[in-house]
Image 1 (cartoon, each protein chain N blue to C red):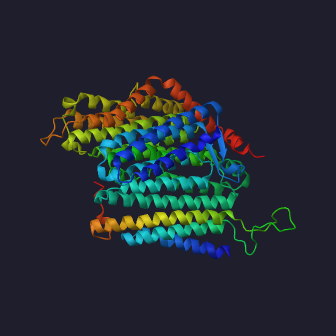
Image 2 (cartoon, one colour; image 1 turned 30 degrees about the vertical axis):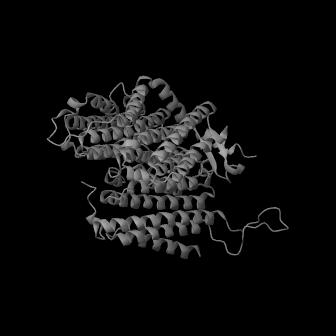
Length: 115
Length: 498
């Protein structure tokens, strides 16, 4: 199971980085989104995958008995998803405003701040 | 007593919310903002005094014991940074009054400044890596909006570069945090410091260290990851640029110093050897970049990059004296750099432009402005008796002590080039005869109080740190002693465990 997820995460990173290297603003945004998803899935995968073992103490036991799913990675991911959503929404609005001003969807045309 | 630890986060938050209620009433926002910044400054002074007396203060939020809950930790270095952050915010809030236009002030400049201040303070005080990520996002989000606020084309283009590069850095940081959690099973920094050496996989830990180096390195603008900084820092209003210049890259430097003194100290020859190379190259590329620029703000932006190299130099050398040099350098740099940007804003106000070619005659017209510029400029280059001289002296001496002659030579050569850059600004903006142009109206009384006042105060602070270097260096040395001995940090944070 981990091996499949590792490949999925790798492909997401590759696609995200490829899109970010394009000149089009839309593709940069898509790349950013994929990069965020890749990071979230990475946390999910390295936090070790456990099936059907919720981290709930059995009525007869005094403490959790291994194996049980670690609840922390999903809490981290949930936080990261919320933050990522806000940041990406801001980035989309920013890129749209820039597109309205400059009139092209091309990062190479946006050089007025570099000289 | 330890509840004081959350005050630097809560006060800016309350101030920002209060200022939101005064939406579209700039005067009321300004008053609320100034009051909040003043309270923040007073509390930061109290926090530093308490921390300096007690060593390290810890607050376990929600009374969850150390590795399970989120710890807020203030050691001397963190408390110094919080104080400097509060001081710069205070200066910039005053300066922003007359210098930022009414439209930007009405649309949330002050709430955003305080939210950024909240994120900066949180980053300096948290003892949990994931919490550090969250504070980074808080301060980044505010800085994104501050950079784009106003919506001119230059601002939008600068903001795109700034936002994109910082989001990549955040994604890397998040991935590094995730892998670290998967490997070690904790994100509390003190707990990590205990457990990292025990997992017995030095190769993996080094790989993680490199991920953190890139993630924080983008934020700190180290070589070769600094390209976003000179492309974006000059686009917002100068008061905002000044706060960015003083604080934001230093949060990256703070995070680097924190993880490379507390967590990643297993393979010093590789990690800190690499840091030494990066430090030297950052100094050189930054100062050479500044040499060919002809816009006041862009020259100063490139100098931020160059100065980051000095702060890393102490970390790379990794002796107690060198770490003290780094801490002292950060203290000196935040004050001087913010001040230089603010003075640049005054030069623009009276000279009409940031381009050196269109400035001039300021020494003949306003000798006081020239003197005001010379204090931070000479301090930046490391001329005695100003603060920069002592900061560089400590770094150079610690470099000589352990025989790191190449890095010392580089740092001295870069100082000379910094002086060249400052004399270029001096010769162009102050000394030469101004080209013909419309004269700007003279400074009004409000502008003299609110724009010149903060600059004079910060310049006085630079002189004071220079003349009374003993107490300041003593504080930096005590802070470095804590950084060099992680056992104190670990013991205080985890010691609260029942």
